[in-house]
Image 1 (tube, rainbow, N blue to C red):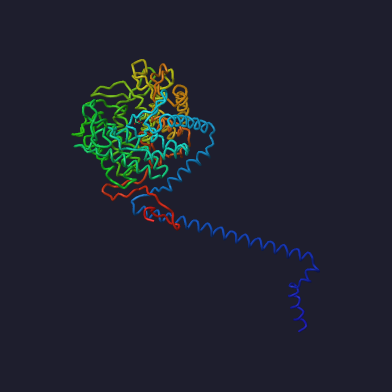
Image 2 (cartoon, protein in one colour):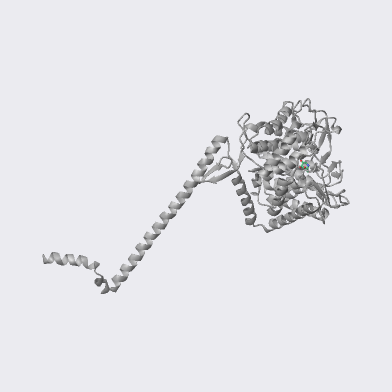
Length: 575
Ligand code: DMJ
């Protein structure tokens, strides 16, 4: 009994504080064990809490993705939301901030300065007019008084982060832009500058005012397509809706003027849900496809009654150019799906035709695209055709590997020729067109320069698609030539003659829409207006690529304004 009692008291003595007070080493050991156990437990609990938070966040994300997926199923495609687009803008700014190449950043700032100079001159002397005449310091309404420069500049201001200027311009669009003008407007110019500019501003900012205005002007243009063949008349009165073709074409419609509205009008259908815009412009391509020649090259004049072409010049320059550009770009805008396969096929056919026009100069072997009348090739190339290297590079990736590198190589050779259009003159600015005489390489013919963008456009695409910094160097040289010859106290002017440097008195709206934008993007990271997400119209207005509607499918707008409510996305129109 005594033995049992003593062994139990030995066991319990460890709970008696007096035991430890007499043994300080054991007390210290006990204290350390306590600290370790507490730290271990605390650490586990923190980990569990963090995991719970992470799980909750992931659950929320899955929930949002499920909602998006549901919407996808209902709408037949991914909805591009105002929220998403606005986030993109934040991405643009962030990307710029993170950019580390100091030379690129410096050059980009210089181009931005040029935009600020051009814009503030327009603001001061020509506000609300179509274009600024910098030497006489006044505005002119070359497009019927639709604020062409202002609308053409919206997206450039936005992309460059010129927010204050963008807001002021937006106020003007909301309060002063008026299309109710009895003016015979060019369907082509109004579409590429005004419809395109407004839609791009809408896609970037998500502000509905731009979409409303784009719809207003497009509705006024739409009767131009009401012809026996569906090939549009190229001019229309914005109030009365009576359409016609200019007398100098002999009543014919012009190829580029009739086949360069597809991107904008398809985009408008996607954003409004109204099929009529897309139907009118796609019909034009169907009509032309019926009699599309084996070489894919169409003469520049088309009879709007019969829908057939008459013998006239074949060119990738003036009056032909952007028809070919839009065949490729509608395919890109349509996500390269089977819906738009025929656009790609037509474009590839035209590229075969283009190859048949390619020639080399002597003695220096510059590659150029000739023109054609009947069976005769003409050794002439417009600077306007210098958009082609960019287009060919953009389309090259759609071919198999061999063809793809062949076309990319051609694009690079053509871009070199176009750059030499600039380098070969005393001002280092290109003339309007060039002739190629045997033994003499290239000779400038029409010698003005009106601040056109095509060469820098191609340099932009080639730099984006090859990563070759040479294209940035060439673009920088061209920019410096503009700064040297075209910058005046109140804006930028063209040159009457690139040999003498004598200036004209016009700041073309495409200088702000295209030339400066492409130069800015040439010195920006490729994620700024990524070519995977955006397609540029022929006036350099980026349009967001969204899902394409199948024919006959019920049209619902693909770009909608949505608000976040109770953790779920809902239609703001149906709160
Ligand atoms: C622009 O209006 C467009 O790029 C059009 O397609 C052709 N010409 C001018 C710029 O040169």
